[in-house]
Length: 211
Image (cartoon, rainbow, N blue to C red):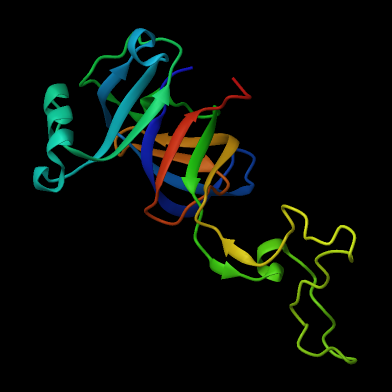
């Protein structure tokens, strides 16, 4: 397993496949991501590469973080993320990783933070049908209905689908096919949609379930 890349979700558009069919794609701006630190098995208990993304003013960085960046001889970065790797061979502090490590037709796993929807009812959150629109229905049109039984068991079971906070969760979509790569602009174009709003931070790794 090799290190992935940090990037931004720029938005969605559409492209035409080789057979002429139209497909929805998502445009990601990945890297360049300098290696800020390396973590080895002897000290940390696992092998990992810490990457930075998007430059930041030194005045906006805490003193300990400034020391970390100075040690790596890297300008301060806004985002820091860690990627587990099988071995640290070929990785050096200060080296930049770019979108060139991905190729068209390969599969990737993409992690992002979903769009927050606030407090949502069961119809929006879980797709419940709701109550009847008329014929005696009174203020139950978007209600959840019954949430349990009677005196036995006398409680609501765990994980019952009810109204509550929706979205704003870390989610990963797997086996996303790479549709195109723009090496000059550091753009990765993938098929379909991915979690997150425009401008949100995403992590892109090689697909775990497909080589």
